[in-house]
Image (tube, rainbow, N blue to C red; front, top):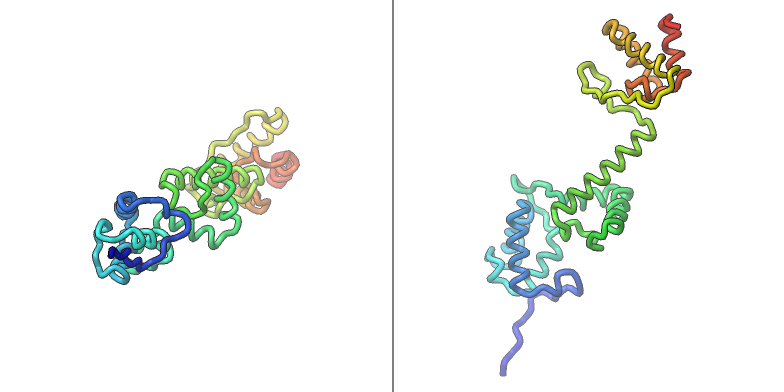
Length: 223
Protein backbone atom coordinates (compact mmCIF):
# COMPACT_ATOMS: atom_id res chain seq x y z
CA UNK A 1 0.00 0.00 0.00
CA UNK A 2 1.35 3.36 -1.03
CA UNK A 3 1.75 5.78 1.85
CA UNK A 4 1.58 9.55 1.41
CA UNK A 5 4.88 11.30 2.19
CA UNK A 6 5.09 12.86 5.59
CA UNK A 7 4.95 16.68 5.56
CA UNK A 8 7.21 18.25 8.12
CA UNK A 9 5.52 21.65 7.74
CA UNK A 10 1.85 22.41 7.06
CA UNK A 11 0.98 24.22 3.86
CA UNK A 12 0.05 27.87 4.39
CA UNK A 13 -3.57 28.76 3.65
CA UNK A 14 -2.68 31.54 1.24
CA UNK A 15 0.20 33.40 -0.37
CA UNK A 16 2.57 31.04 -2.15
CA UNK A 17 0.26 28.05 -1.67
CA UNK A 18 -0.74 27.95 -5.35
CA UNK A 19 2.82 27.64 -6.66
CA UNK A 20 4.12 24.25 -7.76
CA UNK A 21 7.52 22.82 -6.85
CA UNK A 22 9.37 24.15 -9.91
CA UNK A 23 7.95 27.64 -9.39
CA UNK A 24 8.93 27.63 -5.74
CA UNK A 25 12.46 26.50 -6.55
CA UNK A 26 12.79 29.30 -9.12
CA UNK A 27 11.40 31.84 -6.63
CA UNK A 28 13.86 30.90 -3.89
CA UNK A 29 16.82 30.95 -6.30
CA UNK A 30 15.76 34.30 -7.74
CA UNK A 31 15.44 35.83 -4.29
CA UNK A 32 18.93 34.66 -3.40
CA UNK A 33 20.34 36.25 -6.56
CA UNK A 34 18.72 39.63 -6.01
CA UNK A 35 18.76 39.90 -2.20
CA UNK A 36 21.97 39.20 -0.23
CA UNK A 37 20.02 39.13 3.02
CA UNK A 38 17.59 36.54 1.65
CA UNK A 39 20.55 34.39 0.62
CA UNK A 40 21.79 34.38 4.20
CA UNK A 41 18.28 33.72 5.53
CA UNK A 42 17.96 30.71 3.24
CA UNK A 43 21.33 29.40 4.38
CA UNK A 44 20.34 29.70 8.03
CA UNK A 45 16.93 28.14 7.38
CA UNK A 46 18.41 25.13 5.60
CA UNK A 47 20.90 24.57 8.41
CA UNK A 48 18.33 24.77 11.20
CA UNK A 49 15.48 22.95 9.48
CA UNK A 50 16.79 21.26 6.35
CA UNK A 51 19.94 19.41 7.31
CA UNK A 52 22.19 22.00 5.66
CA UNK A 53 21.10 21.21 2.07
CA UNK A 54 21.08 24.56 0.26
CA UNK A 55 19.80 23.43 -3.13
CA UNK A 56 16.08 24.41 -3.23
CA UNK A 57 15.34 21.66 -5.74
CA UNK A 58 16.21 19.03 -3.12
CA UNK A 59 13.52 20.21 -0.71
CA UNK A 60 9.82 19.47 -0.87
CA UNK A 61 7.01 21.92 -1.53
CA UNK A 62 6.05 22.44 2.12
CA UNK A 63 9.65 23.25 3.10
CA UNK A 64 9.92 25.87 0.36
CA UNK A 65 6.50 27.27 1.18
CA UNK A 66 7.44 27.71 4.79
CA UNK A 67 10.64 29.57 3.98
CA UNK A 68 8.83 32.08 1.77
CA UNK A 69 6.22 32.63 4.44
CA UNK A 70 8.56 33.15 7.41
CA UNK A 71 11.77 34.46 5.86
CA UNK A 72 11.00 38.00 7.05
CA UNK A 73 11.30 36.77 10.65
CA UNK A 74 14.61 34.94 10.15
CA UNK A 75 17.30 37.03 11.82
CA UNK A 76 20.79 37.00 10.35
CA UNK A 77 23.91 38.57 11.84
CA UNK A 78 27.25 39.26 10.26
CA UNK A 79 28.64 41.03 7.22
CA UNK A 80 25.83 39.92 4.95
CA UNK A 81 23.00 41.05 7.20
CA UNK A 82 22.41 44.17 5.11
CA UNK A 83 19.05 45.85 4.72
CA UNK A 84 17.29 45.23 1.43
CA UNK A 85 14.66 47.58 0.03
CA UNK A 86 11.92 45.19 1.15
CA UNK A 87 13.40 45.14 4.66
CA UNK A 88 13.47 48.94 4.65
CA UNK A 89 9.76 49.08 3.79
CA UNK A 90 8.94 46.45 6.40
CA UNK A 91 10.83 48.29 9.13
CA UNK A 92 9.40 51.67 8.10
CA UNK A 93 5.87 50.27 8.36
CA UNK A 94 6.61 49.05 11.87
CA UNK A 95 8.04 52.36 13.04
CA UNK A 96 5.76 54.79 11.22
CA UNK A 97 1.96 54.35 11.09
CA UNK A 98 1.87 57.19 8.55
CA UNK A 99 4.32 55.41 6.24
CA UNK A 100 2.32 52.20 6.60
CA UNK A 101 -0.87 54.02 5.58
CA UNK A 102 0.91 55.77 2.68
CA UNK A 103 2.19 52.40 1.45
CA UNK A 104 -1.35 51.01 1.57
CA UNK A 105 -2.88 54.01 -0.25
CA UNK A 106 -0.16 53.89 -2.90
CA UNK A 107 -0.82 50.21 -3.63
CA UNK A 108 -4.55 50.84 -3.95
CA UNK A 109 -4.13 53.93 -6.13
CA UNK A 110 -1.54 52.43 -8.46
CA UNK A 111 -3.21 49.04 -8.81
CA UNK A 112 -0.31 47.20 -7.20
CA UNK A 113 -0.59 43.81 -5.51
CA UNK A 114 -2.90 44.06 -2.47
CA UNK A 115 -0.33 42.29 -0.30
CA UNK A 116 1.25 44.51 2.34
CA UNK A 117 4.37 42.31 2.40
CA UNK A 118 7.10 44.28 0.58
CA UNK A 119 8.92 41.06 -0.33
CA UNK A 120 6.02 40.18 -2.64
CA UNK A 121 6.58 43.29 -4.72
CA UNK A 122 9.36 43.78 -7.25
CA UNK A 123 12.30 46.06 -6.55
CA UNK A 124 11.07 48.42 -9.29
CA UNK A 125 7.63 48.60 -7.67
CA UNK A 126 9.17 49.46 -4.28
CA UNK A 127 11.51 52.02 -5.85
CA UNK A 128 8.61 53.71 -7.62
CA UNK A 129 6.57 53.76 -4.41
CA UNK A 130 9.45 55.27 -2.45
CA UNK A 131 10.04 57.95 -5.09
CA UNK A 132 6.33 58.78 -5.28
CA UNK A 133 5.97 59.15 -1.51
CA UNK A 134 9.17 61.19 -1.28
CA UNK A 135 7.94 63.57 -3.99
CA UNK A 136 4.57 63.90 -2.27
CA UNK A 137 6.27 64.67 1.03
CA UNK A 138 8.62 67.19 -0.57
CA UNK A 139 5.68 68.92 -2.25
CA UNK A 140 3.86 69.26 1.07
CA UNK A 141 6.99 70.60 2.78
CA UNK A 142 7.47 73.14 0.00
CA UNK A 143 3.84 74.28 0.12
CA UNK A 144 3.96 74.48 3.89
CA UNK A 145 7.15 76.57 3.87
CA UNK A 146 8.98 74.26 6.22
CA UNK A 147 12.40 75.28 7.45
CA UNK A 148 15.27 74.30 5.22
CA UNK A 149 17.55 71.63 6.79
CA UNK A 150 20.32 73.07 8.96
CA UNK A 151 22.99 72.14 6.40
CA UNK A 152 21.35 74.40 3.82
CA UNK A 153 22.09 77.43 5.99
CA UNK A 154 25.81 76.79 6.06
CA UNK A 155 28.20 78.76 3.83
CA UNK A 156 28.76 77.05 0.51
CA UNK A 157 25.53 75.08 0.63
CA UNK A 158 23.89 74.53 -2.74
CA UNK A 159 20.91 76.80 -3.30
CA UNK A 160 17.83 76.21 -5.38
CA UNK A 161 17.28 78.77 -8.13
CA UNK A 162 14.86 81.47 -7.02
CA UNK A 163 11.62 81.62 -8.97
CA UNK A 164 10.53 85.25 -9.32
CA UNK A 165 8.06 84.65 -12.14
CA UNK A 166 4.60 85.89 -11.33
CA UNK A 167 5.72 88.41 -8.69
CA UNK A 168 4.14 91.81 -8.83
CA UNK A 169 6.53 94.73 -9.58
CA UNK A 170 6.45 96.07 -6.02
CA UNK A 171 7.46 92.74 -4.44
CA UNK A 172 10.03 92.06 -7.16
CA UNK A 173 11.70 95.34 -6.28
CA UNK A 174 11.93 94.30 -2.61
CA UNK A 175 13.26 90.86 -3.52
CA UNK A 176 15.96 92.33 -5.75
CA UNK A 177 17.01 94.79 -3.04
CA UNK A 178 17.52 91.92 -0.58
CA UNK A 179 19.53 90.00 -3.17
CA UNK A 180 21.72 92.99 -3.94
CA UNK A 181 22.23 93.53 -0.21
CA UNK A 182 23.49 89.95 0.18
CA UNK A 183 25.95 90.40 -2.68
CA UNK A 184 27.59 93.34 -0.94
CA UNK A 185 29.48 91.15 1.52
CA UNK A 186 29.58 88.09 3.76
CA UNK A 187 28.39 90.08 6.77
CA UNK A 188 25.34 91.29 4.85
CA UNK A 189 24.63 87.79 3.59
CA UNK A 190 24.78 86.40 7.12
CA UNK A 191 22.44 89.14 8.32
CA UNK A 192 19.81 88.02 5.82
CA UNK A 193 20.31 84.36 6.64
CA UNK A 194 19.83 85.05 10.35
CA UNK A 195 16.65 86.98 9.63
CA UNK A 196 15.31 84.25 7.35
CA UNK A 197 16.11 81.45 9.77
CA UNK A 198 14.50 83.37 12.63
CA UNK A 199 11.29 83.50 10.62
CA UNK A 200 11.44 79.78 9.79
CA UNK A 201 11.62 80.18 6.01
CA UNK A 202 14.10 79.42 3.25
CA UNK A 203 16.83 81.83 2.17
CA UNK A 204 14.89 82.74 -0.96
CA UNK A 205 13.54 86.32 -0.53
CA UNK A 206 10.74 85.53 -2.99
CA UNK A 207 9.23 83.17 -0.37
CA UNK A 208 8.70 86.01 2.12
CA UNK A 209 5.78 88.38 2.52
CA UNK A 210 6.18 92.01 1.43
CA UNK A 211 5.98 93.25 5.03
CA UNK A 212 8.77 90.88 6.10
CA UNK A 213 11.02 92.08 3.31
CA UNK A 214 10.25 95.70 4.18
CA UNK A 215 11.02 94.97 7.85
CA UNK A 216 14.42 93.53 6.98
CA UNK A 217 15.34 96.34 4.58
CA UNK A 218 14.27 98.93 7.13
CA UNK A 219 16.52 97.27 9.74
CA UNK A 220 19.41 97.69 7.31
CA UNK A 221 18.55 101.32 6.56
CA UNK A 222 17.62 100.56 2.96
CA UNK A 223 14.07 101.93 3.07
